[in-house]
Image (cartoon, rainbow, N blue to C red; front, side, top):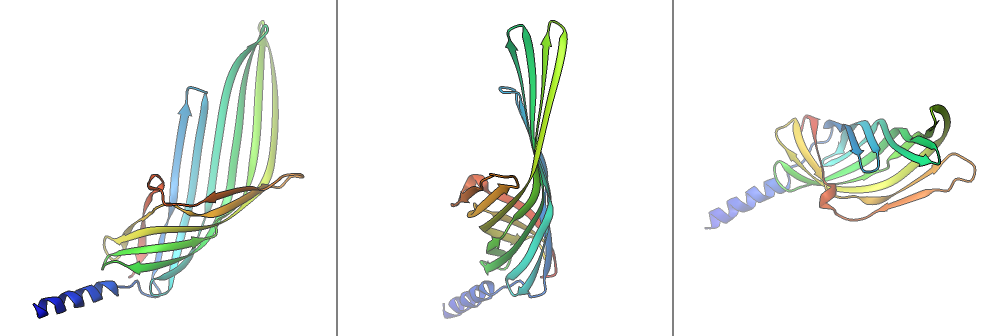
Length: 220
């Protein structure tokens, strides 16, 4: 019995002290495209992002790194109305594109030989442009008149986020990680006269916002 307890204690101690070595490098990131069409209000939402990430362990179980990439979101809304004898068709487009930089610090805690829990502190920044386009076509008895407007402005967005998550090593090079929820703050502002900042707060663990990804580790 004593031998069994001793063996269990040794095994538990060994698992609890499994660490990701200093000097380990990993790559991961986000690549994705999505499109949603709503026929109830004739709208379409498109989103594209590519943000590769590199991390480096400056100490056992402690990594620093950054994500650098590009994001683009577009919302298109079409409407058709009858005004007197005119049939007016309008299309409004809102496009937001940005260069993204997201430095971070990530701390791991060992749960097992291959399983870790981590907390990540990141400072995401976006430097981009917001473009609003509107096209209106009026058809009056076969006579068609088209008018268009276009406005654009630069914007800057800065945030501070904390993300908890789990990381499981499939082998020495590949891992699956999941983040659950997000705690943080983000502020953005258009670069135009009179513009006011838009502040966004996120607090809480949310199973509906779980993200799952893979990463490649160069040594462990």
